[in-house]
Length: 258
Image 1 (spheres, rainbow, N blue to C red):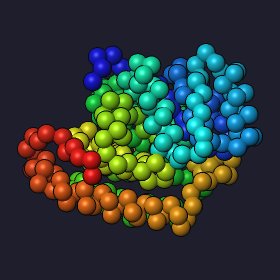
Image 2: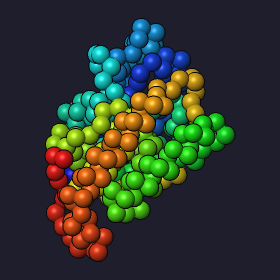
Image 3: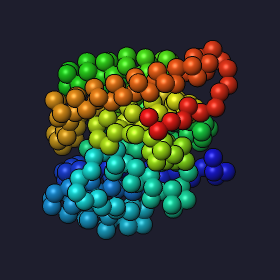
């Protein structure tokens, strides 16, 4: 790990024209440089991003992808840029105001104290959460516990977390990681397989500020189901090492391209 803790913020953005200015305003008091990654947004959001980046040029960098490549691809484009600029960690947060920016100092403090761990929020929902999304999360929780042989990952779907950049980029470059709504869960499981600890912190979550959700009920649930199947096969291949870890024996990282 780099000897200096140097964090930044990465915000993937796709068509949140009405929310992005408020979201960025919530980040500013924390004094951490930010990358906004425009994932092929349409004109209205692109213009809103241009305005925000121009007004906050001293701490905001705008990256553009075209065409739309998916949330995971946008996050990792931000991570690549952050790593090239010398940052050691990146805090991922959504652009729609769903995540509570007041939790940023606590997440960063945990990352500073545990620089080799992936620090993640655990959602505390208010009444705005869609019940279908809430119940659907528990299916993923169970599959993640099966695929890691551990209860260490308490929630793998919340995209409000602090990554150590070096191991995150290593997984992204060497293994199959979903690029859309399957990204948050898959990269966390694969980093855990590679020996990265996961530390959780409860954080408030509200659905969402601008009323825009890019979750497609059928397409994204199918994509997530395929991810769980892919991870299950990967877990079987790694089963001896996962069992050794569970029994407390040291083992080298569970790396693989599978």
